Image 1 (cartoon, helix red, strand yellow):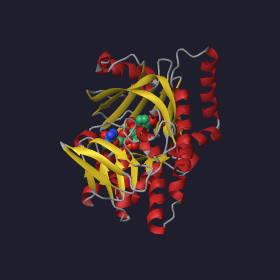
Image 2 (cartoon, protein in one colour):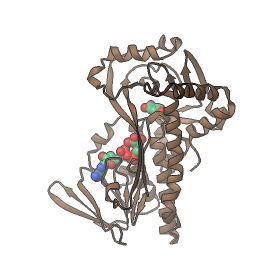
Image 3 (cartoon, helix red, strand yellow):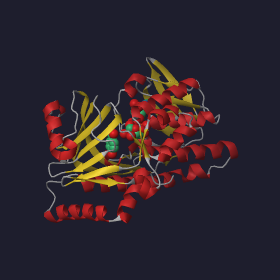
Image 4 (cartoon, protein in one colour):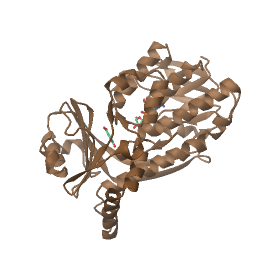
Length: 389
Ligand code: APR
Ligand code: PHB
């Protein structure tokens, strides 16, 4: 098989880039390790920066997102029993769109189908080759048949556990990581959300988050020790712990119900540099991971895709490869700003039981300063709605 761009990974990053390139007549193929059902069964965050939403519309995939997504002009920080609203619209002039990533990925797949895009599922043992030549290629196995994709560029959109980042020589690759001493226990339930806007709760017992997917589908999280397992948490235990971490007025409104999904995710910050090696370009979780506190994961992938899309366009339409040559530095500049913001929000809102008393007081002071300063909240708001691409 021959194509211009071989995209490894059929998650949001790979599908969005595939759609954008195809709309401009740039031939591409997506190789996805798993089935479509497997990909769509993943439960992921649901807050989209306005830049991501704009990119989805540019990719002609934004119609259901705009119809079913909820515009959120603010969110709450709960602390010491009080709710403090962060007025995103008033502070930054922008809002965010709450729309589940699973639905967004479904929209991307359906758009690929409409355009007869080539998305190959169950591609096993995907392996890029000759990345330091002008004719790289990617091999994979379709059941027992060995397959090969000859191409001009390879996009590594295969997530944190993918093969692409590992294809960059260890002598070239630099990785920076920070692991947090806790995880998030998340529950999805067919219940009315407790609040029309998200509630990020700081509490001595641990962080909690009240989010939603729709007016009938709620998403809640509580900070738990890394030693906990899902089996340790019955639904009743989860709901009563969540209530203890919320202000009374919020806890009193909480509608509980059976969990339809329950899982524990560890929190990690991670960046791999460079995001380009020869004809290989990394995008999304393949290159960087953030703790979910700031809802930056998918949104960081969006700017990678935006830069790659315009760089590929310039290369193929005008023979201008400056975008490709500058991709890694440009993408990393914004990636690290998202890393900073995610680290800051995580450090601000979670309990760190083993940290020294000085650090605990510093955390309290950071929050008091934030809530007392229009300028500090403005900085939070501009990061949360999304810094410019
Ligand atoms: N070969 C082919 N496909 C692979 C391989 C491989 N060796 N390894 C992983 N994949 C696929 C995965 O099955 C997944 O569908 O690559 C895709 C990567 O998708 P994501 O992990 O979702 O990463 P990305 O598309 O960058 O999206 C980033 O989505 O998953 C969330 O938390 C993540 O919010 C972040 C955003
Ligand atoms: C979610 O709805 O899953 C969600 C929302 C905001 C976050 C993290 C997760 O910061």
